[in-house]
Picture 1: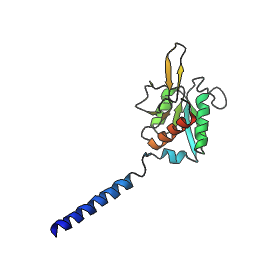
Picture 2: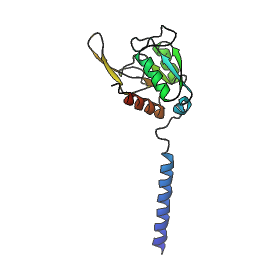
Picture 3: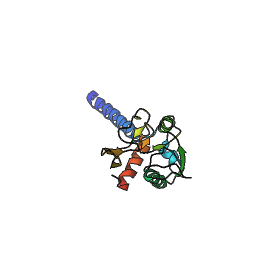
Picture 4: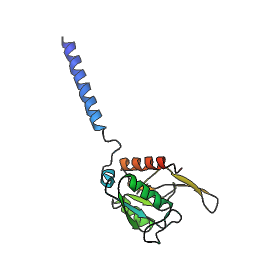
Length: 161
């Protein structure tokens, strides 16, 4: 009788732990700062540095392949784009401090900013004027994994590779 009771208690404990584990997994990947939820149907704050042909800030609105890609990504989230132009270092600091949601501007996978930003998987590859292959990435906030996942899924769907 004692063994039967111990088995029931053990089974109930196991079910409780399983329920707890499953309930805590519902938001994976997660955004601790809520970036994806805030941007969806809202505003995508994008830092853009001058790096033609990927991004060109000389006009009223940024131009270039990454600016166009960013507009398409924002549209997929039903979001407006708020552009912030500046130098790469300033933009990466702003991204790191939560003032931006994305940074574009010809970044490559060899970017030195990995302590300030989460870099996407390479979305395209080009050859520079010296014949060296360059794999291009975009920069998102560190730890905002739902947002980064949504961005990478968008890049995969666009078939930009």
